[in-house]
Amino acid sequence: MHRELAEVQSEIDNAATAQAQLRRQVDTELPAVAMHEHARAGQAGKVGKALDDFGGDLLQGVAALITFVASTIPFALAGTVLYLVWRRVRRGRRGGAADKR
Image (cartoon, rainbow, N blue to C red; front, side, top):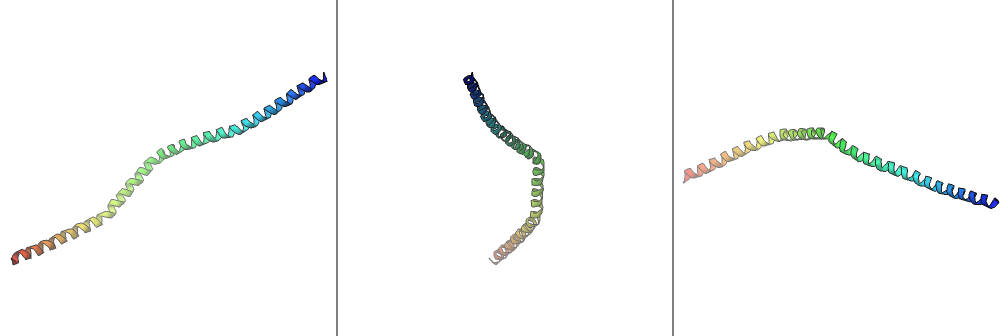
């Protein structure tokens, strides 16, 4: 009888050890799964944030384009005036050279 109790106690100890190992494994896996789900949710959040920022980014790009065009207008006008003056000077030189012939 004493031997049977020892065997039963041994089986209970083995089962308790196995249960403790399984609990540690589950406790280790749960944070890993939670971290994986959190990472996936974070990436989905990035896509959502990008979509939310799209309108603002588009407007910021349009504003930058308008600023660029507005800042190049004076240079374009100055370039056009200089080009017209240069053509007039060249035409005047050619006309004077043609009169000498």
